[in-house]
Image (cartoon, rainbow, N blue to C red):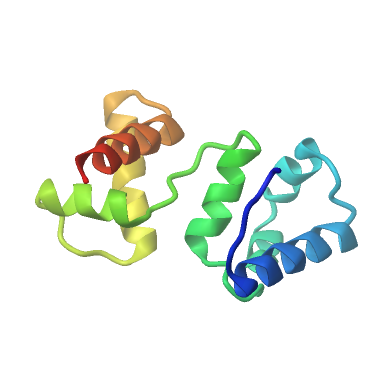
Length: 121
């Protein structure tokens, strides 16, 4: 089983994403990777109910792009580090800048922070 959803809205969201991608001829990981290059396509994903900026960034990570998908763990880490509560795009930019300053891949930094905070719970 690839996905296990217990909530009807999550199933509907998955179907809507699938329909959108199929309508645009996206049927491989490589197609999706390239499709996400266009801002209009990323915006189209955001029109699906239940898909926000974190979901778009996370989907990008799943197909080999390097994004920071800010979730509760990354927000908590930022608060612990003294970073104020920022809107999604601004906090993502903080993580991206930190990764650049540290010479790290953005996605790897995100994963390290996520793992650290998820184990702390």
